[in-house]
Length: 224
Ligand code: ADE
Image (tube, rainbow, N blue to C red; front, side, top):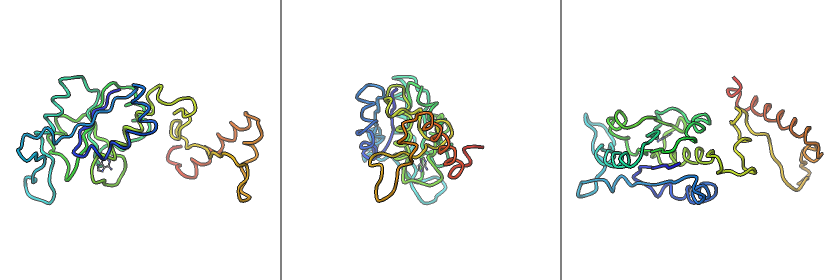
């Protein structure tokens, strides 16, 4: 999968793509992540990318010309499955949406800043608007990093058996059961006996019960 991210602040995202699973996914060729600085496409002599909003009001708006220039250029190079705008007024991201994105070839993601982008960008170029939750970030970059991480780890081959996405929370609409590692006792706090029993049928059953119980208590909405 190829992912092109359009941003005014590529440095916000660089770290999250250069370690751990995101790094390995790129090294192994499962994902190609390209960051494009929108400012590089400004034809203004001061490299201006924003302007006052028509009708007045506080806050600058990202202008359409440099954004259109990057999008048009990329669109001549390949066909994009989706052109996503990260925005608090988009559809709230969930595991089902991540699963859908994980099987496409080319994604483009636009990160907004300031008061947002000129509405004509959203009307004419954007195919999906995604929010990562009901709160406002300073820009779309952290939200885009969240989306990319959640999608790339689902690309077949990115995770090995040990980190398989099949046992993730949410993959079956259940939260994950609790996990433990050595020592079996710390400060008098014990690992549940069943996990040390060696009886894998019992362990599976215990995990299922715990997952269900945890979901009932913490996220009953997932069971509806
Ligand atoms: N940009 C600012 N806030 C955001 C949010 N909650 N989700 C996605 N993009 C955003």
